[in-house]
Amino acid sequence: MSEGRTYSSYHLDDFQTCPRLWDLKKRWSENNDGGHGVYLVLGGAVAAGLSILRRGQSLEEAEQAATKVLEQRADEVGSEWTQEGLLKHILAAVRIGGETSLGLKTILSADQKKYGHCRPDVVGRTHDGKLRIVDDKVKLKLDPKYIDETLSEFCRSNQLYEYAWEVGRFYNEQVTSVGINLIICTPRLRALFYPINLKPDVLAKWAVSAQQDFDEMAAIEAGEVLPRLRWKSCTTRFNKPGTTEKALCVFHTACHELAGDESKMDALYERR
Image (cartoon, rainbow, N blue to C red):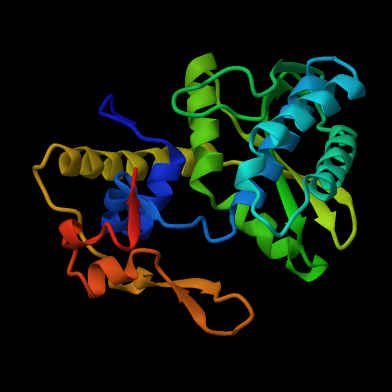
């Protein structure tokens, strides 16, 4: 990867989905979060608790840290959940997630150190001294038949490759070992550790491709080129709630009905 400007994997995900989506999201958001607030709070609270456990502090201190996050972000949860009910899921997830064996001899960072744009949940060394990165993924609900598909998606994620690239660059070592700590709250509470072996040549190709996207993103921000639209992404791969119909991109109306005229978007979207 060259020394040009870089962006986080979240920005890269949006850009690769559709450059116009990525560009609009920097200035606009939906008038509501689409019901996603509860999942963000769940993940944030569990992450806070697990970070405390991995620093050698007690389960009680970890539960206090997780509870504090929920209290601070309670307004993001929405009306469907009570704080008490969600807290039970959070504390159970912290307990079972903290029991997962990550195959590490030492932990170098537990959501403490930033590498480039990213802050992995765990960076450590295995018993043979090699670097390993672990990412916690918390699911409020996941049908067992979708577990393999979910884990496969993580294997191909920009986030995973970003972590390996940035951590490896920091320590000047190849990172070939990454793990997913998948924590599922319902229908049955469980935690699964899924090791992933990265091939250095594949990681290097990802870095070249990512930098090409980063260069285009920087050019868009500099006003040198316009963000392209990817029409195939106007329909997402997710179903609308309670239906088999595919959901549309959140900016479908902005692009297809307003022709991208941002002066008309205030009635439908919120400015960031």
